[in-house]
Image (cartoon, rainbow, N blue to C red; front, side, top):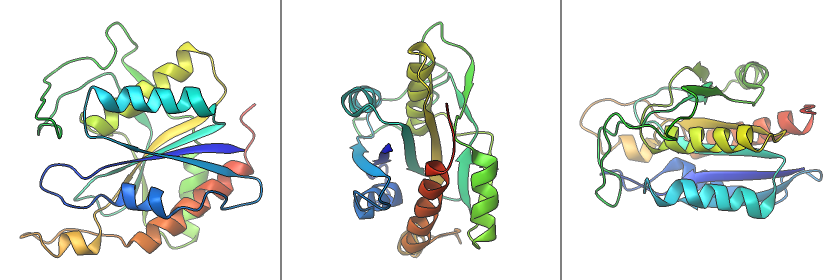
Length: 206
């Protein structure tokens, strides 16, 4: 089983991104039956979707796990819905902003993840990892990439487990913040990623 795992570079005023660090820490073969291919996406509304689609085309993965940062959230968020909406509250790393614009003109209003998020959530909870099923991936690049990915899968009629997962901030990030902010360690993120990958290899998506 080949799994494409993506994260984002740091953005805004936050010097670290746990999703990038998670992807970099993951081994290429966490299990004998799984091969990991990795990509770090730029926080650039024009380049990030194209890079993701290129990686999917090049590697033809059986599953895609896209990770991003959601500072302020106390739990790992398994995103259920990708919205056809871009409405940036801050500029991307190239200074571009978007307001009330579709990710794909004429595309469906939303797509649902094809990850078994309820089963994943139960397994993570049993393992003592804080997790939630989220109904919003926001309207920034995380949602844009999520929607782009699910739209490509739908248009190409691919049978593929794919979805987006938001990670809380790291403790070393929140230590620099003025207001108390929830955090989760990189070690916990890695443990969660292993559990998700293990759950994927035992699932049947055909």
